Length: 366
Image (cartoon, rainbow, N blue to C red; front, side, top):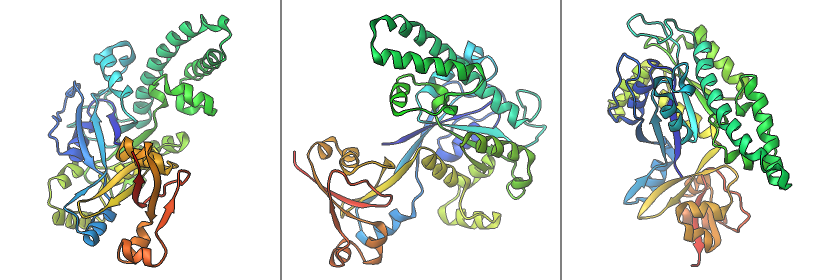
């Protein structure tokens, strides 16, 4: 599976600059609203030092990292839910992603126009949130109108749906999103069919100036973003999109020197990708052999047969056993044979819950 993350925010907050840095795809970034009309899409590798270590031990023909697909969605404005600024089109793009990466401007610069005239992260976040809530409210009201007509059938599923729709309307009336509610398992299953914008998890990106990384902790704009993230139980990272764009153009060795000069252990983009994985409860397992060493993305709590199905549906349907060794044991004992000699390679069945870093060979029969 590939994570799909949509980059959103008001116009001129640094979305396209950040997207260029992430994907080096050359998306147009300009100092005027609605520069991005159709969404740009780019793939980026998930940073994982374990892959290189495995490759050094296994000597495969190729290395295949996990990937994240980022979608650069045009800037939203007030009235987007009613079609302002081609809002309906932009909102439909958000509906298709797994998570929302909300870029918030946290720097002053008189040379960069702000669509509202001043920098105010709290107001900017509320502007985007309100448009998403209004769009969801319209969707829920339409669905509730249809479902209510079926109540007289006595169908319990319809009754549960109508009850959930009423709960959602109440929370929308308070200006809150679907994420603010706590759901039963039944409600979660129903909610999946609604494709609500405000049910998607959010990762806030506080975009600071080139000189603002060192003082980010004292930046009142950043503090506003962090406070909102804590209140919502969301993830938040601080980056300088302009610096990330510069880093993206450097060779690997130059990147390390550049980061050291900035006093950073890793780039903001690496932290962003890790935060996105954490936000969605994702993790990685590996397959390692002479042909390739490959990272596979799954949800935490995934059982072995479903993990096998990520590789190929036949693996899941014909699943017999999983031959599993942890990454740490694999490395400490010089590979699969060394781990097997120590009794650290396990045969796991259908109920085995995959662990982050598992190195697996699936046995199956079709």
